[in-house]
Length: 249
Ligand code: FPP
Image 1 (tube, rainbow, N blue to C red):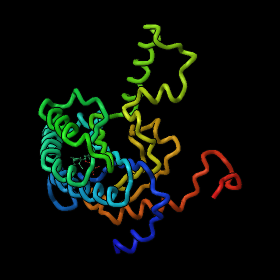
Image 2: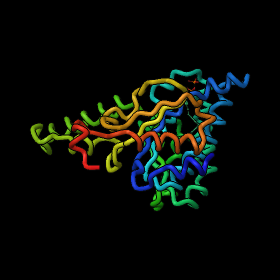
Image 3: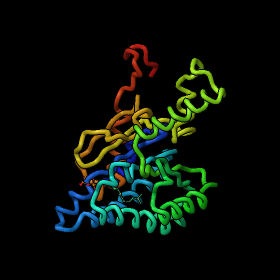
Image 4: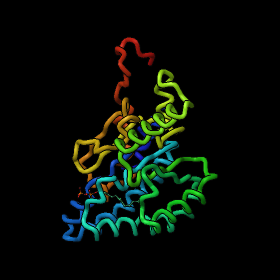
């Protein structure tokens, strides 16, 4: 089934950036009569498969929503487990990332992560910084509203310090203040687990993204699910506000 689906992908029309809201770990664990943390642990396998599939295809960027600013409100035990899992996963996967020429990056209010997680993350980023095949971007302690507010504050600072005129602000200036600076906007955003929401993820950057919602729970997400999402994306007509007739096919 995997190869079948893969062969249906048009390699000339691959999205350059796929963003994923990995949802449903808790429900998957519950279905298995296990604690929520069991779901997160099994979510790592899905992260691995998705990263591998995207790199094999030639997708240049994937961004995974791993921890939102709102996730701090979860039970202390679960937050700690997620942070430990992050450290463990980064440490154990760096060699594989290097072997596959994948660069780790992160977006979010990273300095507020626990010291251990921050350190592991920075080491992972540093150790993979020369890789060029694909960026694996983890959104950690991230929320789009936070990111937009930070960009506004930074622009206001520049105006106050006379480095910038308000009248000169355009989309480019604004985008250069976002944590995704230099990375193309996601063309495809996937959310698993049957929830049809964006949940404060990359709000500016998804202005024209195709949204793909699947009922699959994140720990069950495999290569063929990614292929399916890409095929669906490729079968859509992206008009960017124009009419069908205006589009050069
Ligand atoms: C959402 O499921 C998942 C998360 C908040 C955490 C995602 C983390 C991982 C997949 C593991 C670590 C990842 C990396 C990159 C090291 P949920 O808990 O909201 O599920 P529910 O909606 O069913 O309760």
